[in-house]
Amino acid sequence: MAHVNHGTQARALERVARLGGAGLDLAALVDESSALLANALPRDAACWHTADPETLIETGFRIEDIPAGDHQAVQYAYLPDDYNSFPTLARGSRHSGVLSQATGGDLNRSIRYRAMLAPNGIRGELRTSLVADGVSWGCFAFFRAEKDFTEDECDFAHEVGTLLARAFRAAGVRARATGASAALWPGVVVLAADRRVESITAPARRWLDELGAPFPGESSNLPLVVHAIAERVRGTGAAANARVLGTSGDWIEVLGSPAEDNAERVVIVLQAATAPSLVPLISAAHGLTPRERELADLVFRGYATKEMAARLFISPHTVQQHLKSIFAKTGVRSRRELVARVYG
Image (cartoon, rainbow, N blue to C red; front, top):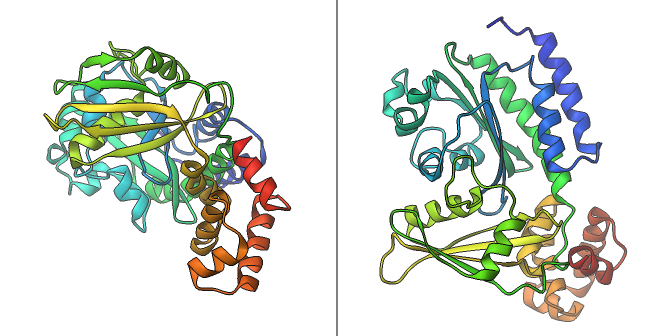
């Protein structure tokens, strides 16, 4: 594979930087990003993901030249304690990493390499979390069969990752909490300890259709986000959730928790995302400060100015100043418009 010069990388950065204002949806954005990076960061295969910025759970995927897998691929790909996990990259100062560098040259130290990469003839792996203003909006993994990724390419991936994060963030701002799916009853899926579907309700099947295509090779037709949440629950023993933009344009909340009788069994609930559950996502998308996020949450809870001031121990005047900043960042002129932006 030919050496990539810095001029090629610089041109790619310029083009990727324009994607944030291109008005593309997430699927088109990934396709365009992949094409723009083809020469600047060559690879033999790739996997792109969107992620919930609050929980860092992968919510969607797009693959390039990767063999069909199953739920075990999710189990090994997103282990939190393996090298270069996406949450670790998202929270670190360097958001990109090469597996061979992280393992000190001994790839077999990674369970992901032993279980997934080596059996498929993959030698080089480069992972990048797409982080802007301290918030991750997705991630990608690039693979090579023979040649490894260089430190220079890792630096470039870190830099381009920030630009891609802003584009992913812009594409995810289109959020609403009501629509055709809002009237659906919540659905329930129970996954057995062996990760097979133990039971499923009728409403759950409609929600699963809203979540899009299943993971390649998945016999139970479950989307990636369901398995990703189930693995998070099994790994932590605690509840987990993520918000996903459905095929209809409505936001869906996917919640998982361990069953009382067996922590390896996971109960998944799918329902229409409520406005309060979307506030952290919308706040992050518009770059609100921590204080502004607190105030936005109180707006959606219906608090008056004096009540906000009392709860946050600030003056009503300070509340109004913060609200003006929130309105400016979100492109609205009043609290009513702010609420309407989420409720659609």
